[in-house]
Image (cartoon, rainbow, N blue to C red; front, side):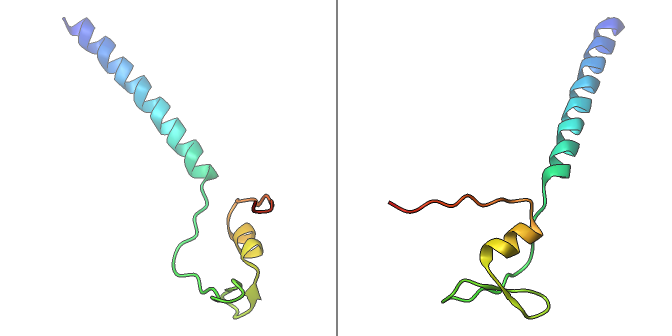
Length: 74
């Protein structure tokens, strides 16, 4: 009877280790923008902490791991 419980516990431990590993890998890949981003309603440029205006794409690329792919609307 105890052997069955030990086997189940070992299975749960392995499952937990797998989920922890997946979580740690995801945390390494995630880089999040937080807070309020001041953006011009007209030109869509973002004001940085130094007060300079940056293009939206440049700001996001600089502060995250996101990349942009450009296409034309149809």
